[in-house]
Picture 1: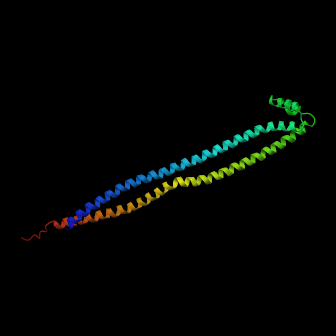
Picture 2: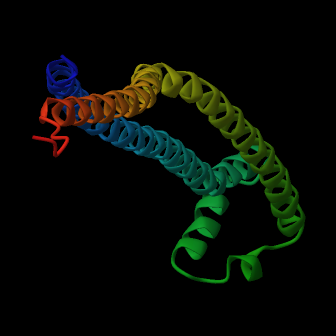
Picture 3: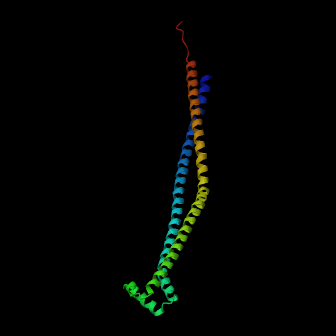
Length: 205
């Protein structure tokens, strides 16, 4: 009886071990894929955030460049509005644009007027520059906060899956160990039962 119980138990335990091992292979494959997907998603989202910051920085740099280029034009307009004749302004501007020494061509109080206007425009430009840089920093901070929330939303399902698969993997490891122990126990029972089936001879006739 022990032989039959052991043989049947070994058969069922072996089947259980194989089923659990097959499930373990599947879970391990899914777990590796989930971990890889998380890493890929994190890289993708980080690159997206970096691209947006780069675009914002490029936009701000273009704005700065446009402001800097427009400042010189504003200086000429301010000089004309400040009392320097339009013809004189056009003359000085032509000297500068043609590569001449415009400063050497300034006469009388023109140098003082030009210096004052230039300082005013430079101060205004610096103020605008600081304001834009501050706005960019605030925008980047807001972007980081919003992107962190967005990243969590995108990654959470994958992280949940990874956690579930990790828990299942640990459970399967325990179940496989128990099933293997059962297999060994049934194997020993079968062996003991087989030995009991062998006739014992006393050697007496």
